[in-house]
Image (cartoon, rainbow, N blue to C red):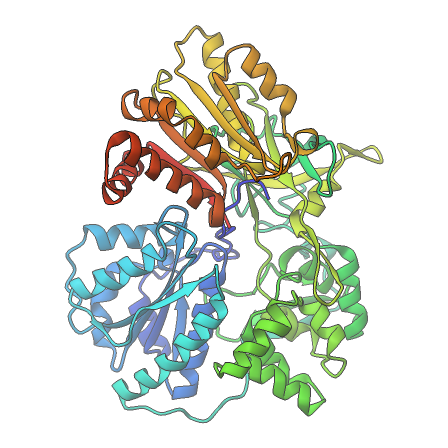
Length: 634
């Protein structure tokens, strides 16, 4: 789906906070509310935050009291005071983002750890890391936090947990947690209270006579922010950009690849080639209506879910007051497979004992429970609607369901335009996601199907997309004379269209521009050669000095971008080794990025006379110097 990281990230956690007199001392807060466990999260997509809430809730079962906390909101220097609280423990759920970076909300804490020389003796801690094995820097943030806390004198009371989103993150977490709590019991001499019942975090309030102007209708921060738009625009205040172009890019084949243009005139939004545009999609109304029908509710009921813990910074799980319809359409993720805690908490509402048993089993860490969750939920891609359809005895109250479902996240796409050429518009290139599951249901990607239907004019109205910009490290070299080697098969071409436009613009300004080489790959020349006309024109005018295209299925044996790299090894080696070329890779992390990296190892071995270890080291050095950049997703 356009260049999107495996962690489609945002920081909605800080939603409806009114920082009047913000108390930045988590120690004072813990003392005041009698808590002894604090769970900090470094979260971008909300998963680490979700895990933190689960751990904070768990504490209750051991006669302890926990709170989940966003490190961005507290003075982390206070960590050294944690020992003032008896039987206290700090847990860190840390996601790794991009090229081994901390998430936005954990950046300050990360910097403090790096620069600080705090004395953390007497502080007890444990870390659970969230990452993805297909990335070079797997769980780098979690590993660093775990190591650094120990170096500063803190006592690790349980091993670092490693969650792999390429495999089964949920299973990794459940297994780690299952061993973690007994270790806590042993360390602190406590035992489970035997209270296994589900604990509600929010209580429902139904509003009958609320003024319509006080009700959220899809905004992410300020009420009515979609009606009167005010810059600056960001994740909590997105800009409604009109769609001016929406065309199909491919000439044939099963898939639908599209090119969209969003108008940002008058928004004061600035972007650079290589940045990402984040869009907030909305769910399919048919799915929303069907959930309402199955649960027999009036979706237009106006409600608030209010946090039972008055001290919590998070007053509601999503903007309230609102309607069930708005929550299920704009705020909640109803199409992904639900995590095991959702099944566990909903199990109590299944009237058939067998259904109840299976739902609880799937949430356990027993081998059969894990296998059942893997096959029945993950492999069958069952979302919450499919689960309700396939378990007729399960009819939970809709407010509890809304409390448990995760937030709908923004989706990130690499911008496929240059702001030098298109200062007032942002281009997106994406493939529409649609596939059939084992149960014969058709799953449609939320964002891409929603974007596909955004036509420039819809009955005289302009179709708009709520969006904001996220800065990226994926940048053209500072010196225009440096050669660039761009490798991007499929929709991985996106940022390179922006790069090429920019190099063309620099040339027009009379600047001397280095070699600009593109390696693109697709299935068939006459089907999905994206941006063929534009690229051939750039080649004709000399903006692109080399256009290398691999059509994987146009001949008997498969040809991919890495094969073309090896064919041109002499040229490439000269550009890299003697002419300071910058290498850029965009697209699939699991296979392509790895195969391309191996091709560069082989070129360095063969033409640089290096051993494999030296070649690996050579490429690593290019990365550290910012001459080998990746914008990949899995």
